Length: 249
Image (cartoon, rainbow, N blue to C red; front, top):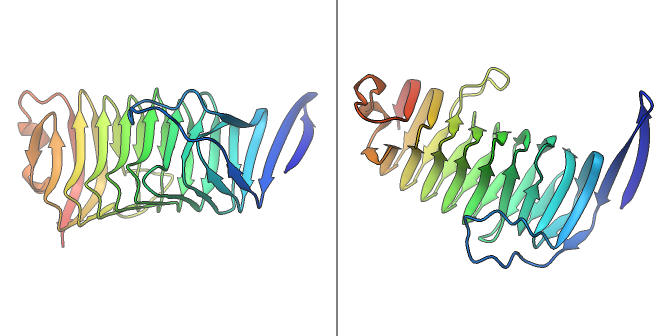
């Protein structure tokens, strides 16, 4: 572990780095997978600066305080929780296994090139989180992304073998993003694609599907193909989805 301090404009900041360790914390004992693990048994980070994990294996339920600056690969096999009010840039992370979930609450950041594999819930965003996942892969997840009053941007993402690719409740699940002009996302071999409920909103440039049973669900109404949905004919539906093109392979 490395702990550094630096000053800027007469203000002192901290930077905590965890390097090449197996960080093991107790598991979250909550029986409700919809509950954010507020009572993390282990807290790390820097409340006035940045935390950085480098080549670590993180187990159990860990809460990260402060801003994220993680630019090296790590593997997470438990709940990893970003606290509210922070920002961050993170690349090449792996969330592996049924008990592994990335939780964000009011966190605004980037998870680029990450891999979520075999998760019960890959990412859970609540309370005005805003997460960008450019080029991230969600593989064999039960629910890859679930947003509640939050925003997820998924340009260039792969959703493969998931029961449900994305779920937005009073939130936004988009892929049109000027900062990350990538094609996609690609939904492949999934049972359900994207679900939008309770004034949720989706905005996509291109959508590509392959062997998906139900591409879209809007306020309880299912559409086997994105092409079957027309927001102008939505009737009583209060959630809306917009896209430019849909290609079914």
